[in-house]
Length: 197
Image (cartoon, rainbow, N blue to C red; front, top):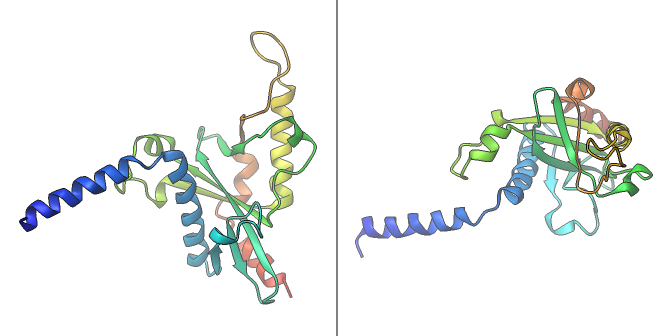
């Protein structure tokens, strides 16, 4: 088989592999990888928890601290930016989240994808860092913002029936003005990292 023919066959194989990637899965992985890269770009030593998830439930990344026995935990939530005025947080699992905290890691980084590019890209390199927005939020703030948004949605009656809104699988968004202080706030992780002794 000629070199050109081999290249063509390999290219077809790669195209078949690329078509099997679901965006829902890839966007989560893109979010995690981009947060890890951003951490390193800001001098924050972050590692994926891939095989350790049972030990660090709810966390996607570990951050080294000066104390070798203590790690900071980061959870990454990735989704489409709903509008320029809103920030996507995550999906609600149900009414029980009105009562208990959603996030358990030290920090939650919300990665919002540009919806236009995110929905149209074909895993051929079109999606890039400039299509992503990062919100670095300490756990307590993330839980407060999430619960307030959830309570607003729960209190809002259904348009057609006036009945109670179900929260299961609801996309939870907050006003971008509420998240402005956390946009690209990598310094918060630095501060927490250095405070661990």
